[in-house]
Length: 170
Image (cartoon, rainbow, N blue to C red; front, top):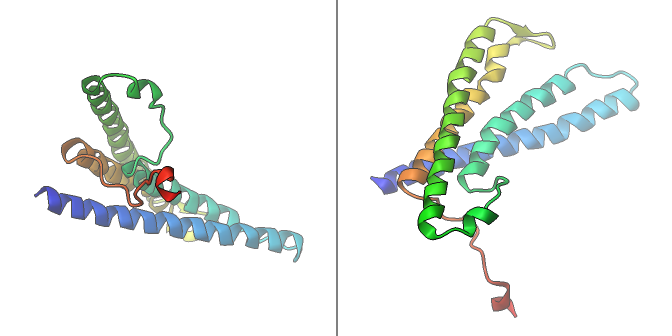
């Protein structure tokens, strides 16, 4: 059962990475286009800035969940690493539970935000609901919560790139 859950989490992680990387690449294309239209064509396009904001929301909430799964986020582990292993494990569980509270907050309040703004539209994209643009918040919260559950019950996923001792290369 744990192997099946890990496989599902690997697939979810890959989907989060693909979404995050795609958003980052599109941001990297949209911003230069905005600069080009403004300063070269002297006719600024109105859509690049709101598009970049929407893509940043996507990158932030979906991409951050993927980063959290592999422990690629900023953290202060120095003091926790100085404690005995049982205390360190208890601190890790406490951190995971606090992160679960944050994920649940994102799910509950993000869903409410989506519901409240669903019938509003964006001026530059009248075909797009504001609620859709906030959808990455509860979706990212769900992904984050699933990754936390994985870490609590199965353990941390293996690192995708193994760390080698630098002395072994000499």
